[in-house]
Length: 290
Image 1 (cartoon, rainbow, N blue to C red):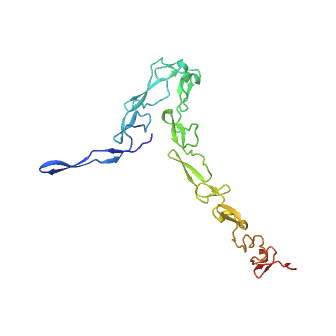
Image 2 (image 1 turned 120 degrees about the vertical axis):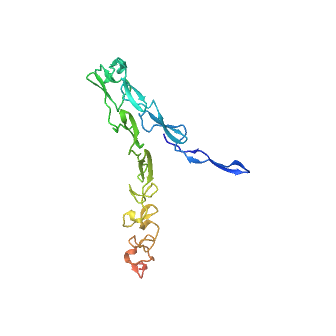
Image 3 (image 1 turned 90 degrees about the vertical axis):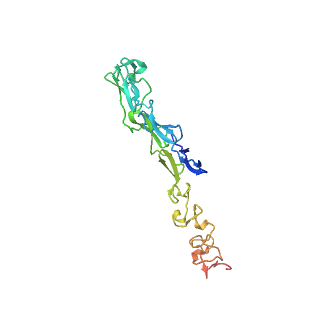
């Protein structure tokens, strides 16, 4: 249960003075402070310790809780509290136990007369405290705290596990949800899923992350692998087709390593021209007028 802070009023500060020989209240200024919990709410920070914490005047106060018992998953004991001590008192001899109450308690906390594990199970199965039949006695086998259990809801940053006394509980786990995008990282923080965009430039399938959670073709020309490829917006394109005169082109998308330019276009070397003739910096057609 989460604690919701609130403001609580504490003892007021009173200033006294004299006015005309009479003592009077000059000021009344209540002090406000931030409470750590909501009034009346209860918390059980330590299960099975016969105590609970109750919110009073904005503070948690420890008090006895006779219902906060230690469940030993044994039909032949009573789970009770003696003050702040949880105890498991044996039920009377001949008390019913086992499947359908067909077995009997021995008065010392044991269920007698079983033939197999099935006859010992008088209630719902306890994954952290399975009961087995050993030499005619039903024996509770408590799993060590922390023993993991099958997780019915993967990706919620929590997982079932065995706690103290064989009671199944839920613990925080490194169990983050699957990221919705390769450019979004997910993690767990105190049992809550967290997500954030990966850094701009992080490689992803087919490109790089843009820093906002999207996988794009590029953010800069260096992401395009070199050669004639350049980054336009977030897409890698051939600079010979980007409708811009750049990267050494002598004309718009021609010359300078791109297809040759037409007659009359500027040129530096013959290959800048479609005719493969460059005369005084201009592409020309040697057969023109021939």
